[in-house]
Length: 210
Image (cartoon, rainbow, N blue to C red; front, side, top):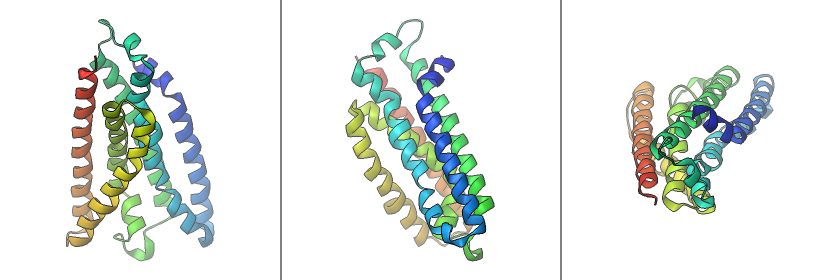
């Protein structure tokens, strides 16, 4: 089942690899030429958005939309195992991509002006990128499972993700007097807790599907 899930997710894996290569090139350029720093910083957020829209959303929605889930859900392959395998493969791939991008950023773009609390430095280093990409993946999967429509879920994913990152996490961060690592751990915990809830919502939506 894991092998089948991987084969069905080849496009997101290939897209993530291409994105990593592009970002690696930008980071290397920024490492030697400051003119590339700004565009590299802006490009960093595309991984989270891409994982949510193009990996998380179609993970369930596409099969429900096309009716192919009926072929996948059999007695020998119950829907819970089907979904668990898909989520596990997608989580492994997206976490690997986030880890590689984070490593590239840490090497090519060190902490801005020595201040780890600066926006880009904080959001692109250490725990936050990993926790956030898992949240993005499960958000996309949950939206796809609930709406059962790929296009609707994709349209909803960007504003919801933006509200959480800009209207939630960043506001709390700026209002807090915690240290860098206290905030990293706390915010990552919130992302992971939300990812667990969204995973439960996805499983519930799949199990309630006729």
